[in-house]
Length: 115
Length: 116
Image (cartoon, rainbow over all chains, first blue to last red; front, side):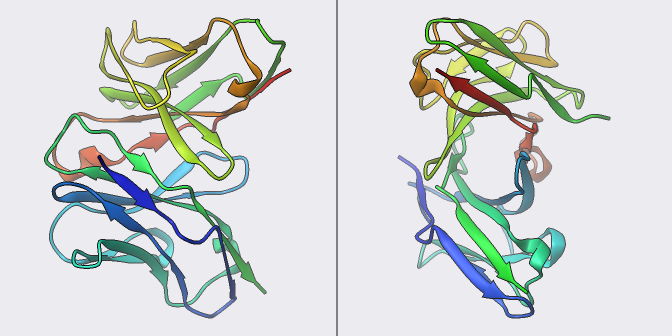
């Protein structure tokens, strides 16, 4: 079975400071990993993904994430947070080689960037 | 290019009533999904479709039915609504290519459903 955990329900950070939103995963084979962002009363928007290749993935709005196979983690990062980054962030995973698998989402982390 | 649209945006039902949620996409995607979002539980997959005329059960299919008669539309039905089905429902789609671009799901704006 595949699963993903976002250990923090809420992350607060001051504007201009670096931010990290944590994600760990569990799959039986190679993972496909995703980050999505949800603004209030909106659908989810794709931020970035790791399929294969470089462990550091760069995405939209200055976000990046690092795939760490040994720690089974895919933490989302940004060097300098903006108030407009405040939103709900979801990590998602699926088993890469099994095309019949669907995405499993984490429970979400509410990021608040304080001015 | 509207992407993924959902109808209606908000609905209030009484227990036992039925309704259909409509999802439409104009990206010619093969795969379509219905999720429900509940506080603290993330998104859970209800049903999905890998092509016109095909549907499959997801993680939480009970109490829901779906149909994919046209490639661009994916309907979610509640035959007899229950308060436990109060949720925000999201539709998503993606194309069928196995290349990297094919792995990204595109989401609609959501439908808020309240069952009294």
